[in-house]
Amino acid sequence: MTIKLSSTESVQNFFKEVSGFNNDQGSQRMKKLVNRILIDTIKIIEDMEVTTEEFWKAVDYLNRMGARGEAGLLVAGLGLEHYLDLLLDAQDEQAGLTGGTPRTIEGPLYVAGAPLSEGETRMDDGTDAGTVMFLQGQVKDVDGKPIAGAIVDLWHANTKGTYSYFDTTQSDYNLRRRIVTDSEGRYRARSIVPSGYGCPPEGTTQEVLNLLGRHGNRPAHIHFFISAPGYRHLTTQINLSGDEYLWDDFAYATRDGLVGDIRFIEDAVAAKARGLDGERFAEIDFDFQLQSAAAPAQEQIRDRVRAEA
Ligand code: MBD
Ligand code: FE
Image (cartoon, rainbow, N blue to C red; front, side, top):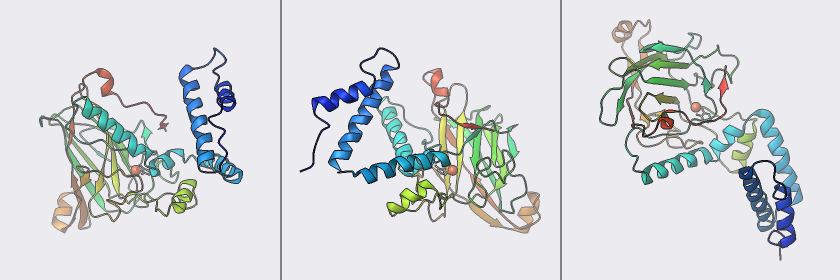
């Protein structure tokens, strides 16, 4: 039989001391959380008969993961970031907050402070010979009324599936922009069709996924933060139709209502009318609907440490 020490009074008392219960300094919230995490950890060690070799492997894993900055990637791949969306959805439903474009995960690759423009923008720096993509749509309220002056903060990968800032070979803020919607609530962006992201094959997230028999790929997608005075901040993505990973996303971000229908057009005349030399380009139309904010705090993005270039 497995030895169980976790429920003995002496071990319980030991981890109360460890968690600072016997002093009046520090944070009460932190003490409670740390104590719960430690007690649950030793229960896992006992119940799963975790060996000391496995324990030290896990410690080494955390060191290597941190050194590579992959914690945000791991929580996406383990479905925890998606779970937070499920929790927020359930809280919203309980509070009667329904309607509008669904939320989905931010992911670990946002960079704050992208260039801001009015109504329309070009997102790519012209160095990636990808298919030109024209993305446009309207930001509306839940009744379909256009919202002028909304900020559409969007970011996506290049044709290799990598993101500027994290991929240091790209120019600053490449494929990252903020667009203020026009008087009809419209935004327009010229960019290039992104490729899906894949976890670094040599990284610590892929290392775990391999042991779970899983791949580390996302479908091609475009991320959005959408905000406007009087409306709830929306974090979402559009995942592109036709991608083999559309419904097999390692981060579980694709949701009903968030599939972007990408149309590829091969027409030299239409291309020329768009100011292009070739004949092939792509179009995506995607509208967003924002819920009204019941309190000013709902207009703001939730706190999280984010990169700022
Ligand atoms: C991405 O581009 C992404 O959106 C997520 C959620 C995780 C890893 C890479
Ligand atoms: Fe992404």
